[in-house]
Image (cartoon, rainbow, N blue to C red; front, top):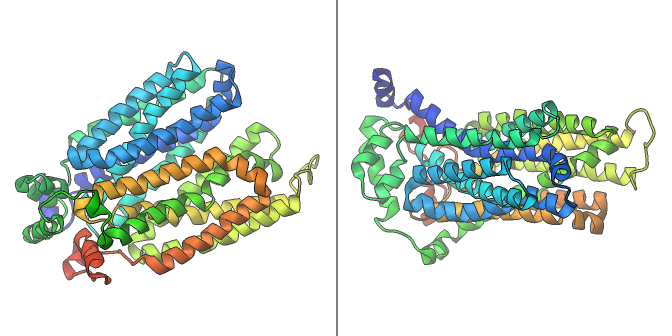
Length: 477
């Protein structure tokens, strides 16, 4: 305890506090990541268990995203009404209930309903977890801490893939889906031992608790100044929808929604959704070989390169990572599109002992795309979305942007096959490449650099329509 207080006084956050903040972000992301990884391998067994058609199986997979959409919209309201911690408790409880029910579901209807409930918890956590980290973390490491949300998603997906590979016996899908409840229980326990953010306490008028919370991340000599800055940014009142849609906040809201859109429409879901066919064309003929390729070529690469983003977000900044990543994604998708064009109808290379040349290029393009996505817009979008909005409207704006993320993901998953039938494989991935170019232009034109700035400085940047300059304490804190 003495060491923690001494560290806080010198400007270094207590280690236990940072561990708790990181744990909240990790568990918030793992709720979705583990489920997404496990369900991808469980769908075949679910179909056999309940003897249902493809539509029912797709509903079992996609309704989690619908639930997350609704949960994200509710999450902003909950975070403003009962606090970031309170919203996380709701998320964890809802998730645990959904995980338990889906593991014992007697019919496909009950399973789909349970996954909708599960999605509600995921959606609330996707708003409250990163928002809490953005408000609680020191600005010098805020980018990395919020980016851990995406890292936890990718790592949990990887763990889910490995679980599917390891436990392949009949009926194991129930145990794998039920195990997810442990993540919700862990999230509940962590939020019990950590205070809410200073922003939340000041919004409800509790200056004493706000001071205690802020003293964990700010040197004691600067606590009062920061409290005044936060209080000023909140304007001492609650903001309604008219305030959110007012001209002065229109730019950050458009930026947050745009980032959420480009994060999902630049091809990642197409790569994941079409992974089996991609790896089949690349020479992996059996379902087992395709699952193994997905585990390592997508799951492992995604995890490793998200670590790159976590390491460099607060060193090189948000803009450079996003711009370099989108250029790399564009080039990789061009390779994927040309490879599919070369493969034609997909008959080339069939019956061969190994993959064709076009299949090898296809595999390389996929791996490069996943790598560039993971080091750029995948995690960085979450960081920017949770730091660009002013205090009075942060909860609702983060909810809108996060709901855009889930809604776009659902639409792409739902209509990807129709798009594929209209444009063909080469055409779809060429479209994704074009969207990457649009995303690059969008970032280049509208996103200012927010590295090293306090949340209050970023708010001031929008109000004055100029880049905010971090003061000296922001560099040291």
